[in-house]
Figure 1 (spheres, rainbow, N blue to C red):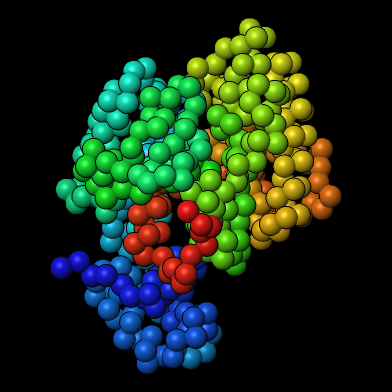
Figure 2: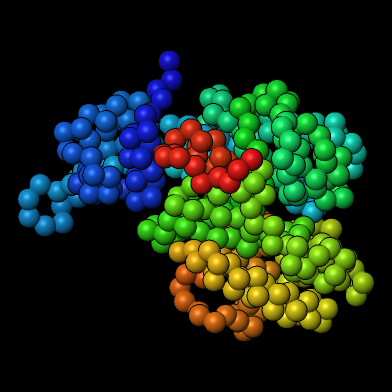
Length: 370
């Protein structure tokens, strides 16, 4: 029977995930668990193979601490996401390291065609992953668009993915043969940013996600903030569709009108190396719009970290961030940064969903009403 950690053990696992390699004394100080109880709880986690004991490193007088870290081979999970032109699938180990990835063009066709391609990609990734024959513990799916309140879950999404709009998504677990969690792509990307954040003390994080549209995702007190029906962060309505806005679709339309059509993330990254005039003009305008949006989030939410990124090439994120810094912000400080995850941010966040729901401590929720 698979070991299921209790809420206190989940809190310990989260401390180790945040710290990378930490001593028992650090865990006790962070959690308030007394040493005796901590030793018993930790022994269960070690015996279950979730935690490794490292070698003692002497750094002074006395008995050196024994560092504890997550066992990367304890479990693994898969994440699936969609961008304007592509489907992305990644696998991550228990420590959150990417161990496999696949990116293919988004096929034309109905929902059956799209989901069949997703299933093929997932099967291919599982077969090739270094975890061998062990099945992943679950699948996370990150979808762009607006979720309906109604159950079963349904989403309205962009034109190229419109075959999935209004579809009953509750059957994806059967479709893909894995326990499945579904999330908005910006919220999923925010989860990846949270688990990869440089400041491990930051408990609240906001992400401005530039993708088909642009929206935001939030982690509040170490927990996903989903809002009503999972729609927190719909900041794209500040600049409605059909008007100039800081989105990949708007950028692609702008570039196509100027004679620079792009049909893949790779082609967009290549164009950013020596940006044509149309791209430079778009960057200046989009930078001002994003600076305004990020200022609003910073003033209203006041997160410990505020990140600009999403499903765009890392080079485009850097160029946009430079324009934001030029346009901006009332208070520049280290809390505001550009993402380093690149186009796979949402897929990475989706892959974290099974780990988050299976192992992260959840004392109450940070979700709004459904």
